[in-house]
Length: 235
Image 1 (cartoon, rainbow, N blue to C red):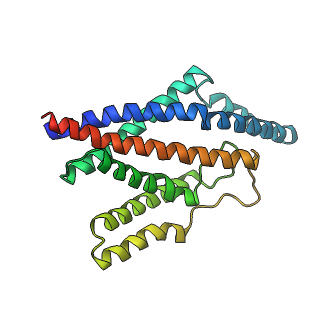
Image 2 (spheres, one colour):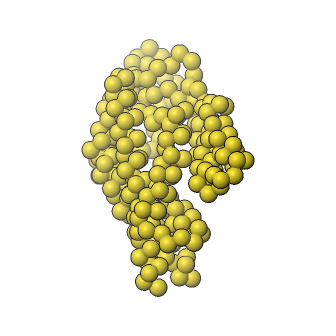
């Protein structure tokens, strides 16, 4: 029981800190850009409706659509989602560190965090970069499948390079796993569609989203290793 208790306590504490930290970074970084992009998306939608008559079904769909209100409600949902996501990732990290039977510590946790950033953010964004509202996109299901496959394959390749790099077959398999999703390619958006937001806004959003994710994984990894070691020492 102490083994699982330490993992859960560490994950909850780290997830709370990392989730609040990334929410603060988003509030001053990516969120203002998203709000700007939504103005372009709304303008584009209004222009489209001025040329095409909406059907009763369209009005019915809009009436039933739900989204959190701007301001406190929207921010609260964002913070809650970030914290829950961080706790989930922290559970995975602390579980893997514990299963390795290592002493933990912030340095080891930092390496796990960098591996998580590479697998969950860096590799998938090569084919599916962060998108602003109004950006053309392929089918959601196809994108989710490709993202999950890319993250899993990259994580497997990193694990082989980290723990089996002395064996040639492992290195070859690791390279294949990391490269394969990009050879297959990410789902492409429909031809002829273009982003509604200006290109400089898109580029700034990609940069800030990447930096935010990088800091998030650094915090997540280093604190997971640090707190897990502290809890183990306190047994």
